[in-house]
Amino acid sequence: MPKAYWVSAYRTISDPDKLAAYNKLAASAVEAGGGRALVRGGRVVAHDAGIAERTVLIEFDSFAEAVAARESAAYQEALAMLADGVERDFRIVEGIE
View 1 (cartoon, helix red, strand yellow):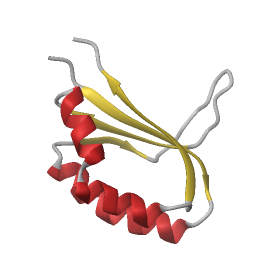
View 2 (cartoon, rainbow, N blue to C red):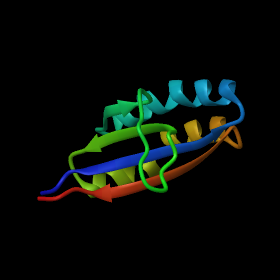
View 3 (cartoon, rainbow, N blue to C red):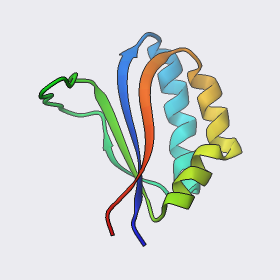
């Protein structure tokens, strides 16, 4: 069964305090949902039309697990803390078998 990934690219961070509050709650929600952080910030080199922005990559054992973690009450609470503090591109993608 292929793994799945949450991919988040933060275009802007307008409220670092909201992001910090989100990060505290999101980390435990992701772990409870079976996710493992592979990338959280760090250096980025952008090519083509890319933007060098904060990027987060979370791995899950399955696509269903990744979707369920995103829909969980714990993660929804984390999202409420984030509110309008950032503009980001968030995707759930399935890996290759």
